[in-house]
Amino acid sequence: MELVAATVATAFVALVVVALIRKSRRQRRRHERLTAWAARHGWAITPVPAVDWGARLPGGNRNGVSLALSARIGPYPVSVGEYSYTETHTSSSPDGIGGTTTTTTSHTHQYIVMVVRLPQPYHPIAIQPRTATSKLGRRLGKNDANATGNDRFDRQFKIHAADPGYARRLVGPALIAAHLAGAVPPWNLYGNELLAYQHGRLDDPDQVPALVAPLIRVADLLGR
Image (tube, rainbow, N blue to C red; front, top):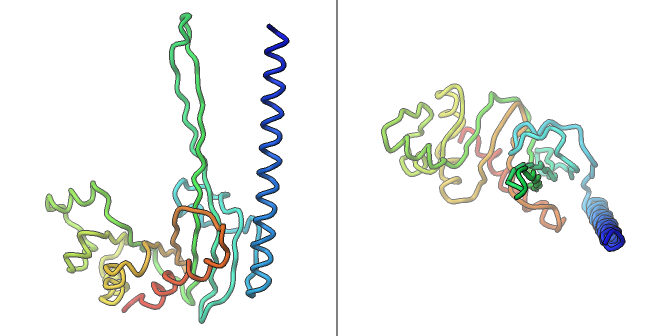
């Protein structure tokens, strides 16, 4: 019996090692594709860039940006990168003999992050889709100091800013229309870095310019 258990354990370890080797090879080939694409198209690739974007992304993982592709598009320096964070859940259940069994599971969330650097710094501001709680509060008459007066926009989106007057100056009719048309993503702005994100990975480097283009449009429409 012990021999069978040892054989099973050895086989399991071998499978894990093979899986890790294959994963490492896939990651290396993917990084080589991204590096080759960047060289052909005039972008720079930076593994583990020294940026603080993670503080403004789901999970808040300050060390979660694993790479970034950077270039200049029109007047703006831009970057498109990969970000991840891992959630770990622990649960306990009876083991049938008077004790408990603890199980730990982990799930890693992957995101693509887009950043446009603006020529001047701004106070913090963001536009995000309203949550169910926020929609309910609005229906119940809860005051929203940053409401724009465009009822359709205000039903769908919430502006996060400390100064309502500043928010109204920065989020004008043209930017509101772009959000309502689905032409621009939710975003947040801190200092001179305009940031947006979406689920996924940079598996197709040819999509990099298209990923950042809608955020460039936000930059062009600020204050309009």
